[in-house]
Length: 381
Ligand SMILES: Nc1nc2c(ncn2[C@@H]2O[C@H](COP(=O)(O)OP(=O)(O)O)[C@@H](O)[C@H]2O)c(=O)[nH]1
Ligand SMILES: [Mg+2]
Image (cartoon, rainbow, N blue to C red; front, top):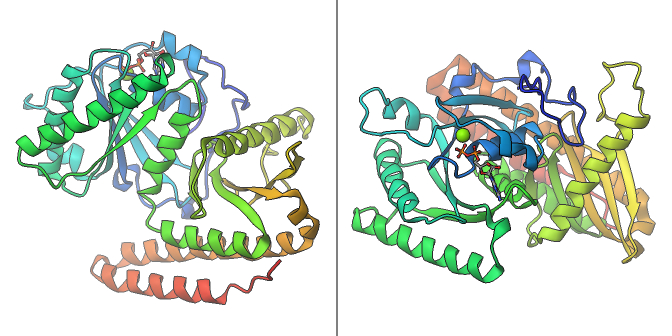
């Protein structure tokens, strides 16, 4: 995927050439078609294309006002790191499942998550009917799909209305499914808007469910923060600013926003004051790191993990006095992450060589991951 935007819109705070770019051929696994798929569905004008443009193409929210309606399925490859590889399919709103040309086996077969967008500023009865129809159809083809409902455009409504509509949509949607005989199907609900960070947070959660290594990443983060006196740490995909993992302490929106903003600051500064003359020097590289002291006795600390990932930590100022320990532990953490990458790569290659060995190779992966977790020699702060 790249940010060559034919429509010529501005790319927010990122320069146009700061994209996922080309990557090492060995980093990609097969063609786009066997990557897990995230489908964006919902009634027309509910905000599907806006979500896709804002989260993955840095379109500024105001510019979505000029988006034309989608009249065919738009496929978009997200290829940033070996953890985050998927395709997003943006559907037109008027899709008809009973149309014989609609190949539901093909569409839902390789689907990892189905995001159904409901416009909260509009009457949602029709949307609920469509949701029910979509989930019923998709579940029949592929019961492993994760169903995510975005109650969208909540920027224009009051907090009370938000809570009330979430409760109402939740109960109606699950009742409808139960009536259709699908009690077992789980729907996750998110309140979202492209005008704040909620859409990035919700998308983070959707993407995380598609990362098989998530428990390992979370575990590594837990070990890292508890040994380093860190309050909270996010592993970010730098380009999209979705976090692919965090430690087990609860996420509050403010900390997440703060960390997102820090990434913007770092990229902006390196674009303005970095080596502008050489277009091949990326705005984010292995020298990227940043430290911001806040006026509430906390410190924000950002370090590069690899070409696409950054670790952003929130640390109490008094704990930051032992920066040496934090830095040392970070190096161990980074090394562990790169080993998880290598394992995954190896695993993918083995799978490609011998499809039959699939079960065996995942056992190997799990064993080695356990070794890796126990081998991590962190220094306690
Ligand atoms: N207020 C508000 N408007 C939104 C939001 N997301 C999208 N929109 C607007 O909704 C309209 C339809 O968006 P579009 O992405 O074309 O919908 P689609 O047909 O589902 O792809 C556009 O005018 C967007 O600016 C949001 O979070 N809040
Ligand atoms: Mg659209």
